[in-house]
Image 1 (tube, rainbow, N blue to C red):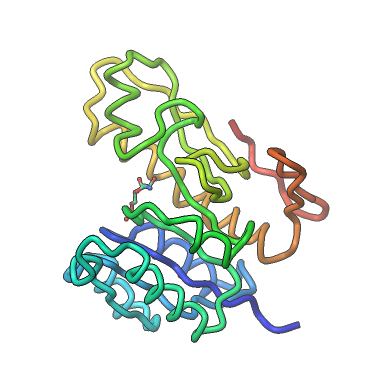
Image 2 (tube, helix red, strand yellow):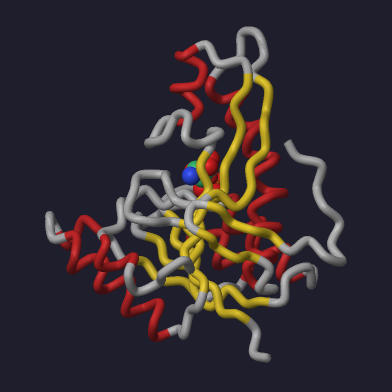
Length: 213
Ligand code: GRF
């Protein structure tokens, strides 16, 4: 069977993108990052793509003004051109419209730095600290039309420590993101995920199951 072609969408630093690209390079995931699409000129993800030799393209959302559909159309066209089967959102800070989502049903993964459904939105870490949560974590989920509300694939709990700053907690969560996002991509690529309503069933046969949460 052909290797699954992945399109990664990123807006920022790109460390999750790198963790997935490196897991592929190490032979842990039988797939290929066909393209990195970045919507922010100058973002760190672009430099990482250059270093990793991954094809990349910048589609600046600002150039489309308020026309979200036109921006998404350009992104979808790039993904289609690259024959992408799995779309991986890795710090992609734009909401996707139903029109885009319908083109990749149950084929878009996202990572969010909280234990969803707690603390959705752009500030998952900050909101957990502000709320006084003792435990937060990360969630990898399939993307549907809700905000950070699609079927959950993997979660990992991370304790909030006394006096944690946003940066310190985010760094501990990020360490786990770099472990679990490549794993979630591997599970998808190997056809081990079955979506039943809100529930994602995982076939762990022959795999070492991580000790989460
Ligand atoms: C991560 O914390 C992820 O949970 C959130 O955005 C951040 C992206 O980091 N969605 P990076 O760009 O992958 O380094």
